[in-house]
Length: 128
Image: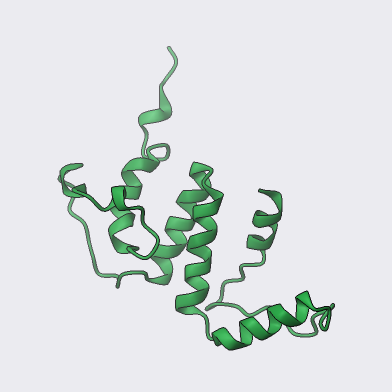
């Protein structure tokens, strides 16, 4: 007999989204924030601050699993906006320099947020 894996926790992304969404109100869809207490009686630990790096990263990965790359990009942008050590002005200046051709090669390493590198996000954008 074939086992239906679609009800396993690894495949039930909608259920996981109801747990993560309240922790990332910055990027959660409105329908994910409505009445999610009725899903189950699983006790939830809300020790992380809203829009924490870990929760935004989790939501980004869940969005990629859903195939919602636009929403995943929104989550990755929120990570940069909320948790980067670089100023917005520095990002804007670098972006303008690249677009205008003033900087074709980068001597500096890309900015990392904590110990994470998000170089793969550019590939994600280009491939989708």
